[in-house]
Length: 128
Image (cartoon, rainbow, N blue to C red):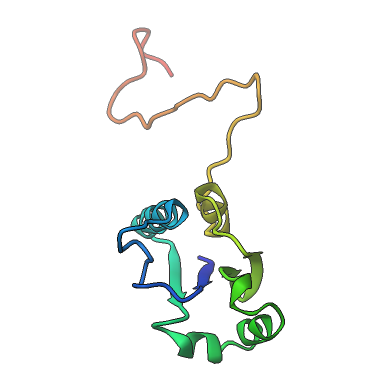
């Protein structure tokens, strides 16, 4: 499974969902991360204020900060490749990054929901 790492600006707590003035983008992103983790995704968040070592030990992140500064955060990486900067990815993007996105049937195609049949269920004629 792909490894998703999100490098965030300095936040008041690990998720930024604290204090009197909540940022709706952080509330939504926190819920999306929790959802992905419940599905088994390998996703981690790194807050510049509480986890600066994560920024320092990653050459790509360090270089990004040298060029864009903390104003360019958040920075999202998948398996070490930058996939988004300056914004939090939406849930559908995170699912795709994690390899968990479901593929919808094309327009006009009916999806058959087949289930496994157990036992003797060959139908009324006795043949399958």
